[in-house]
Length: 315
Image (cartoon, rainbow, N blue to C red; front, side, top):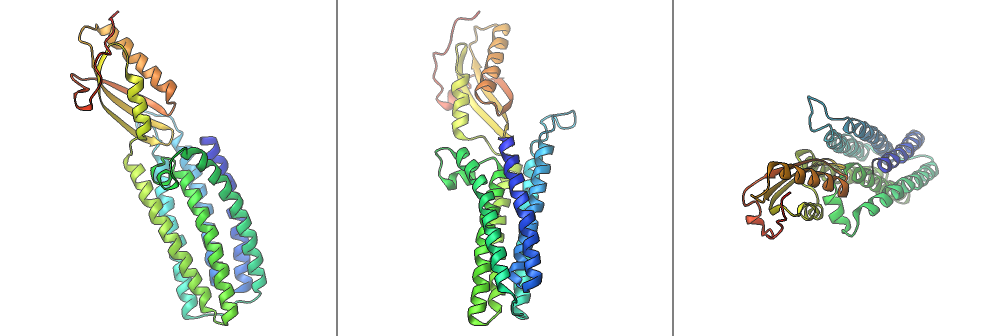
């Protein structure tokens, strides 16, 4: 997953840098406010991809004495920073430029250049979006798109997908604003398009910030994975399985703690053997689980309807 995410980020970064340069050149030639805000949008997107790549590098650092749980949540921190940048720089600058252009409109010149740049930008954004879409579609499984967007723990992929989608929509809005300005002779429509692009970015930024905040605070693993843990823990020598607590430190870093009721006839050596078996079984079936804590607890399965009769012969 990490390799695929890096590839998606590199593709998006390369596309956005080229698009930003083209848009700024076109804005300087045409005087289009919407084109200028689109350039800012692409520049912010490029910065965001660099921040996400930095976050991935930091998140991969191994645990140490100061951070015994590792650095995985750094990725979620930088994802939150990206959401703030999209709101403050992307949305804020777009709305500001749109209002200025609406109050003091200037007719665009050489609109054909603007249309050409927008067409090229749309094609490049589409290529980057398709790469992110394919990876996201593969990861979502049988979940709906909305369930996958709100339930995924991979903030990087969601950010790239939504940023690119917003960029494509912004290009369409910018082109429409420029076309209406030409058709009506009123350059204020270009400013209106800029404001609409800013509002679109604000909505995307709020959604990203909300998702990143939840991951930064700490979210449990998917219910299907928790059910899989319960199934994998069940074995002879365990009479009940209670609460299973999971938390994501990163998309591929899950800490799991399981309350289990051991058969009272087992000796200390048997309990140690079973705990070791559980840890190895969980890591083999769920590679994302990198920490497992098995906590002996009397009547652990009482509140969870755990099935009795799992007791085997000790020894």
